[in-house]
Length: 290
Ligand code: C2E
Ligand code: MG
Ligand code: MG
Ligand code: MG
Image (cartoon, rainbow, N blue to C red; front, side, top):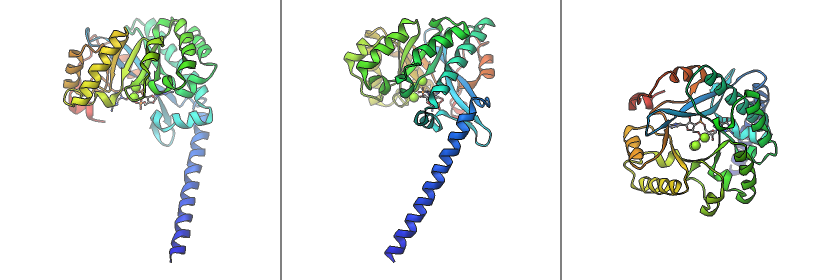
């Protein structure tokens, strides 16, 4: 009996594996075509200054309008793009699209000082990144000071010594640098001091219930104090509730981003938001919905 079961379960397992690798292969083929078929889109989420309540930037977040699966988030395809090398053309597309979009908004008189894009660890290690940034800015006729590049804490700390020169190159072109998902990796404070960074984004996991969770409150308080002593701007990501916002404001956090202000929006919906002077807070119910 045991033998039959083992074979049976092995067959089941290998069939499952085949289904999964087939699914992966078809996803890869689809992703390869996604750019030329114009299925990729950037959504934009506001970054709000807590002193003025004004939108001071937007983070561009990648979406894939898949013909069968609908709107697919980056978590479902960025890892695949990294494994297959597709992250390079994808990253170039993101850079070009974000720069061109901001230039279009600014030319139309919309007040948006800055757009942030995400760069993954593989992308960051590629030689072409710095040139790609220059090309995107030149192509869009956008000044470098309007662009910010977000790199996760874990990507930046992995091979920190070598990363300094890439960061210096990006920074010397006038582009701002942000450390994303801060508080989830293992930062060496001596490197943090040497990196030419402008901004620190505190990870969503630490912001959740920061007003009530004593541990999160202690960590966030320490991060803000440290960032400010290094003359860095601090952004809280994933702010969903008014008490979190109040607490972060009390701690002197500089900027907030989260569903409390807005979900990431299509370029078209975001353009409407740019007409609003000060963003109203969304009620918890609507912030948690959809
Ligand atoms: P991230 O850079 O940390 O982006 C913030 C993520 O948090 C986004 O998820 C955003 O939709 C989500 N978020 C914002 N506010 C809230 C909130 O109040 N509550 C909750 N629950 N979530 C919130 P998204 O768009 O799914 O992106 C996930 C990750 O994918 C990003 O994390 C980033 O690391 C990566 N990513 C996104 N776009 C790109 C891209 O163009 N290139 C690369 N290489 N990676 C990207
Ligand atoms: Mg980010
Ligand atoms: Mg983040
Ligand atoms: Mg995050």
